[in-house]
Length: 224
Image (cartoon, rainbow, N blue to C red; front, side, top):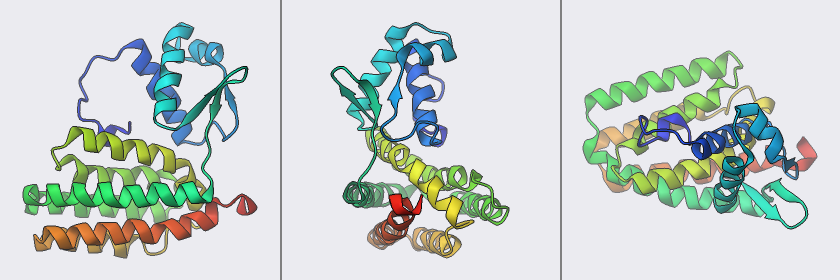
């Protein structure tokens, strides 16, 4: 789970959790490609643990849909078809819209100022051509979701972001930064400032659903 989404940042880390975070991070960054087999022994050696925590991490990742456990082939990195990509965005639109609706009564001027600063950081990353834009994007959204006060909802949203992040990075490679990024995120801040929960929910849903076709174009195998 990205740090900005974590609801228990100081919780003790078990060997299984360390393995899970290590693999999840590698998946987010596109280090492992769809269809690639993950070798428990190799990953265990990388992080200095035994195979068992890595195998338990595989099971958790499979439950999240990030990998597939297959007889005689082991752990295989899952990939998304274009239909599945759209489905992830449809689910995100519902969950993230709900998160915004729950968060809005906790949003004050201090939070709005912080979101403005996070948006500036995102914009600077985009202008520099740095793929750090994806991380800044998650920080922006994660700050909003953290205010929903629903840890399980936050975890579900985070899992969807992990699935989609490699595709976001592919997108970023093609377009220095999403062209409408600043305007759309500024519109989100304006919706939050309005205090209208339903309006803010709709703006978030429209933002997410509008991104799906653009990302799908750049995630298409013909463009890689």
